Image (cartoon, rainbow, N blue to C red):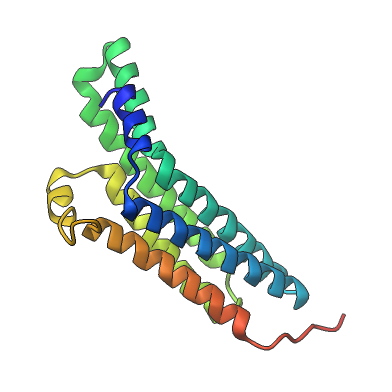
Length: 188
């Protein structure tokens, strides 16, 4: 893919892209509301989690339209060709994805540790974030047989997109669950 192809893909965002962006923004808004509720309850870890989740959802919504991972691929390919290591680009790709998986595993463990003792909705949201993270990791790996399998589905919505939407829905549902509990301010 060339840079001009990348720009063309941004111009031609389809209905499924816009639905996903809208879903991310709705999840971000509900997560921001959950952060506000956590602040009222003086639950600092919950507040930090929901605020970070809201920011992440906004970033992922923007990424849905800008397709930043494709831009990274275009830049990587251009550098591989320019600096003469294109012949081993598959090996570099493999190590990049493996490093990303290791980072994700350590980040996941850290987040689980940091969210111990938080409301159950936070743990449910982590499942949704894990789902989205797995989606991103599999897309980064770009296994062609997975692309063939998960590219199927309804015309506008592939199984890839449905997996991403399910993760977003889990996060939004968890934030909604968090918001729906009665506000009890802790006395200090």
